Image 1: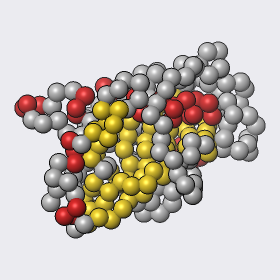
Image 2 (image 1 turned 90 degrees about the vertical axis):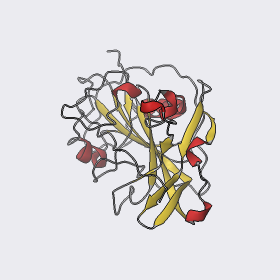
Image 3 (image 1 turned 60 degrees about the horizontal axis):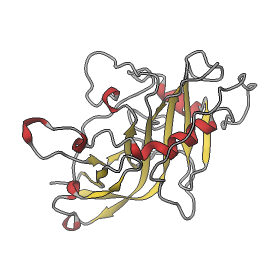
Image 4 (image 1 turned 60 degrees about the vertical axis):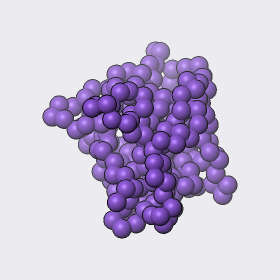
Length: 252
């Protein structure tokens, strides 16, 4: 059976609508790749027996493929990719902080990328938003660096961080976040979380959903029915997707 694959960003394991990599960081983490194309992997075979490791070889290529390509998709909250209301200046994607107090997601900053951004639930309305096959989301996670508020640029949101892969479009990102009386900057890359959707009847999936994590160096550290991820995502409103709320800025 040919699998139609579909990726989505991971939400923090065992915590509400937020997500980040549970894998340990590398000593010398590398920046995520700028993007690239890849062919669709072959359809998975039969599901492995119970008790198998959380790196399912059938789905690891899908996780790796998403990680290679996600930069070209753009951040879900980067308004420069569409016209904002009232002719105001478009806001960039912003750093957000995980709600988790412990574990792999604890107090890390993150940003979400989506392949089909028009289907990603930015606003929490009354009705669930169905996710089309082919949708894809990857969540970048960063270690927070405490900074002096005086050192925050006046308009950090309008300083593009470079081209976002194959599209060549600028990646607008505000890495600063105010939490109470403190200001943090998204600094060292901590890894990525991925959730992907294949055909619902695919063996070895969570009703078609597959989860995975990628270490800073690019190694796929989990793929498949990752229990820590499934435990949270099963309660998500939009199939297995939580969505995100508007992020606070570093402005006082």
